[in-house]
Image (cartoon, rainbow, N blue to C red; front, side, top):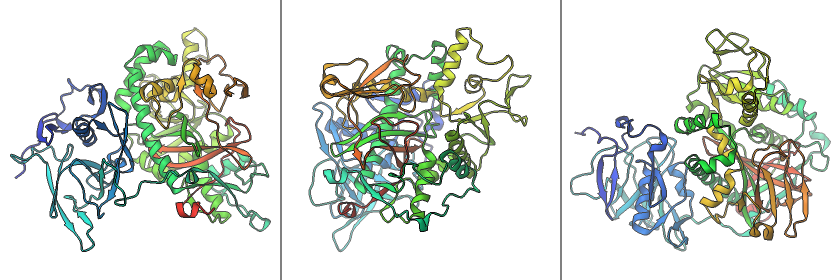
Length: 619
């Protein structure tokens, strides 16, 4: 007979190495001790370990205390199976992680990690446990965040799982839960010839390859379904059924290897976790927060948003440069981003119409992932979509409207704030009399901040009684997507913070608030801390010669200085890779291309295909 769960934070047992495991029964949390999400963050020796007392926190803490190593931040436990190294904290040395699928000839080892897939008992998250003993017949693990029960008396493990070795010497582990699946195990030591092979990083697999579709006149019939509002709006904005109006690019698409897609997926998930950690760090240090130039009046609301709505992110976009020298992130569009329809719908339809033979659509899962995310969010009844009077935002809003409706939520599009008004109780209602409660926006939060700054300066930005964008987005009874805290990771002032927290991280470019000798030596890029569409950016080479610069309306903004890492030049265009998230996890990829070194609002989105490694080498 099962006993009552141990209250939150209570001791469940002691794992080998003297590492305690604690109950994560969140129903019994004392809210006076844990008033918000940030109170659950656990740090040890100045290192962020994880959230109390989740499975990932235990695994990272056990490894750190027993080996001095720690693995990178992950959004979900199952993502650990994609990691390929741990870092020795004291020396900074990277040590290999070997991933072995369930059923591998190489057996699990003491101190390794057993990884569960997303789904069933571990829906959305997966699970991780530390392996404490391995035999032919069973495997024992220590873990947190399963059943909140004390471990059996005298035992230094939480569960014993059945194991079998087949006639081929393959080791199989059975999960205790019939609806959950074990991916395999991670072994923090190099080993050759066994287990799942580490994705190759040979330079040839990190190339971007341009290919040409057969777009002869026999296939010039329409491929956009203009009965769909979003596709009709895309056609109106483009002026043709095309991905590019440039005749030299009209049939061009790009291919990446399966290895590169895996790299993009892992990089996206890892970087999201890093940006979240940096956001928390900024909110704990007022001197850093001042760099972001937010009005003082809004700072408490950003903090409240972070405390209460950290898990309420719907989607975001990373911008990358990929060359044979590696993958580098430029910035994080965590607030309002574009190119979703092009990636999640248009590039796939174009590729199917022209019978593109190579690989599969890199954005094929994006729409489904967004639908799933909307289904799990707290919005219901009616979501108002706010957009500017702009052709691109028109199809962007209509695409997201279709996504939200597919999640079973009603939507209504509002252009600017037309038709919105205050009722007698100070609530905002639309032209049909429905109260505005949930909002998804294409507007940047910074636009509303500009209105707030003007109001604080005594300027009248709207007619008396008329609803402004700031009125909507800062209304206390309206929940906005993306949350207000997304202002911080979207602001380029966070990039020097990231570099300080993760110096020399292979995905990051050195970024400072001022030009340094190191940046002069590498060449550098100046960027406004708040800007859109490639405005007010300048690139300088190692001799401080200006390579290119762009104009715009953000020239009065403070700037950051980032190491120069030019986009690859392929088929006469510069190509940027963009990855998209759903709830902070990788959900697909696309491209932005331009003849300029700086991607801007007019840059085209060409189709991106993923090709298996062995086939990619021969393209």
